[in-house]
Image (spheres, rainbow, N blue to C red):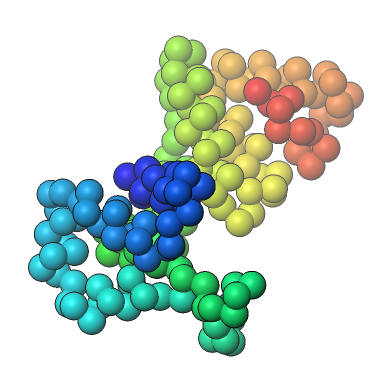
Length: 175
């Protein structure tokens, strides 16, 4: 839903050139269910105004001005960030969850390979150490035994070594 809000705000901006605050108000007018209750009853009037009248600033809290020397509005981004933080929470906890999920990720049948590959690669790419070679080894360890052995033997044939150096193997060659 946050992506749809962002797309709508961008469409309003390009189609009609509406100010950021007005675009945020249009998005808010479309709220329903939990998010409407959150906006109407959970947030105070002051918090709502802080969102609607937010301006872009540099890291040192100096406002960013447009060519007409007016502060640039940032209501849409602030609205989406506030919604995200309230309903999803701090994204840093997802990193810990990904580590746990990756350590237990396996599949038993060859028919599950595509799902395994997509899930594994998606979770690994969210990690800061995604370029480390041990993820390639972990990927192979999650394969069914016979398939894993075949892939490792094929890699040994290609490399011409008994000991596999995962640093030298592009991820695409594992797949």
